[in-house]
Image (spheres, rainbow, N blue to C red):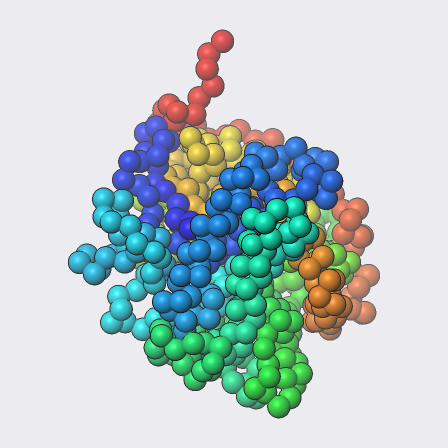
Length: 490
């Protein structure tokens, strides 16, 4: 199972001996599982420019070995905590220490994963993160299924991962839907008893925070899963329930204009207009829908143009804060409200914290431009570490967040490999569900952006070229570059 990430030595950029972040979440698992799925693809099934990169992720033996261990951990967790229904809370990777009230460290005896919560406290289950993990497992099942006849090991793994996916399908509605007539999906499901099977007792989960997922961003992933694969057998009119969910969501899709020197573009308004909000296009086949592709292309055009016009040295996305920078979440240590104010629904905290992973949506839309921006950010002082790109840095280049995490690293790698949208598309087509997906998404966006405003979107998404980063002088850093990251002298 994953760890959230690791801390780095601020002077060298190398891994700190005691820096391992001993917890993780289903969002981190989604990225790991997605990369494992891509690594197991046959070279003839991927683009030539991607096929030569797959072995750099994992060899086939490595990927299968990791998947064997991971599914065993998930099976064990489900046996001990059936109330989670095959989903995961934030968890302690090495187990929870009753003595310290924290996740077990490397100097403590290892045990299987456990919830990252004191047993006396309420146990919560995040819907957004689990939507990400559910679709990652969907992509993995698609790859394994195509190769199940190659060996008994792959056949066994296919069956076990299919069982994991089916378990999530069986329990998702009981865990995350607020109940008959509500049309609301719980952002966080609170569990009364961790030993009650989620698929057999819907009353064990409830919405303690009255916090719901109506957003048309990454939170949409669990909604799509509920709609397409959820077990609605306990509802007399399941179609009406699902329609109501989408009707409520549609009310939160808003159009906004972004004006450049020569043209005005219509885009989807963001929550903060953080790159993180575009996670759904990393895993699901949204970009196969022409209208949606154009909207997301326009959004990335706006994101990159804004950074150029404001002379920013990178892109904005929710991320851990650089040292000494006070932000809006996690006692000031996490910057949630990072984005573009003129394109956001909510107030922005700052535009002075930038992160390399902010380029991942642009990489998916236009790899040349997206990678140019990614490279531009790696040129910033101390943005390149012994483990690759840094978490975040300040606009003036004076401070960095000396950590690496799954969210701020693997999103970029996954985008460079094209994401898992095509794998999920193939699975939806085989399940005769692709039309359901397209119709739901198309309908939600078309009510806002078609037909009267269609001509204002501009161009076709496949032909639009995103702006490259402008040439600008990089800030000088009073600190020496990371000693571990310099090139050898010739």
